[in-house]
Length: 97
Figure 1: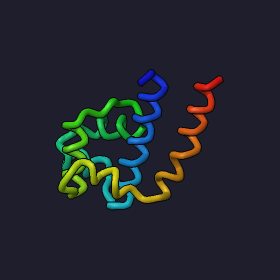
Figure 2: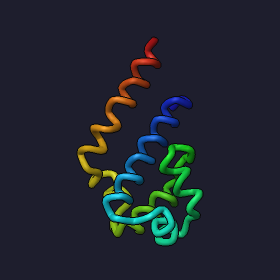
Figure 3: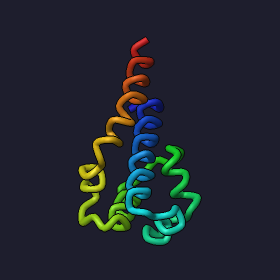
Figure 4: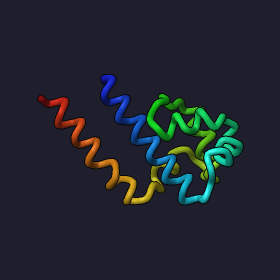
């Protein structure tokens, strides 16, 4: 996967985390405390500036009270997918030029 693909994936994951955090009514500080991460780290995740390891996914999943890390993505609301569709498609189109 090229740099653009990794960037798009990080940005997409960030949108998912921000959306889930907002829907759960959590502040960045509360999510950081629950996941044993710093507020800065959570902010960087949400802004697509961090590559995410499986360990981080597991911490975030637990903080949202999901049993399995895969459920963190499986339960993402449709509107998040819709919000991600256009930017991802744009990057795909740009990479074909």
